[in-house]
Image (tube, rainbow, N blue to C red):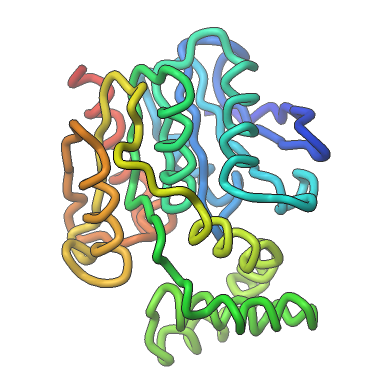
Length: 265
């Protein structure tokens, strides 16, 4: 697939960018990344998606080249932003959300009708709450390295040796730093988000994806199970051999599952 066209969308007090692959406004799938991720990190998945004329990957506020989070930022800010993205396309068939992006998509699908929602390991409160005070300190001191380390160790539960391996890859670590500035605010928003009895009330169809390595395991597998309990009717699909980062570790495999879900309607 060709290089994307970048669309800029003005939103309340800020702006978003959306990387658009394929047609400018054909039958569309919209991808919403989560914390410590941007549109560029989902490019490999976007390039393997088939079945939609338009693949739109959102660069949420708080990461370059999108605008700042702004004061008063919360889950409702993200839902309004996502709704603004939907308004840019005339035929949205599928919303795909990963991690925090999955939570945003589920709240969006309670506010507006969504034909098909796919949530890959969505998270919800309580998630990472015990790390909030340390994340706040790292933010206040501008210590991006510490923000990344806290997020990986205390929120994602990665062991020290894995974190040190990531740190030794200077290019990878620099990329994590680049998307780390909103970590505290986003983690706070996740834990401050309302927990309705039912999520995705206006979705016609909901599919969930969980990595085999995370199934039933804290922190991602257990919060995933909690999310699923808040959706009236959703189908769970396991991604063999994968965990939370299949968009980086196995983008073609992840895209293949998403493609199959679209054709199974």
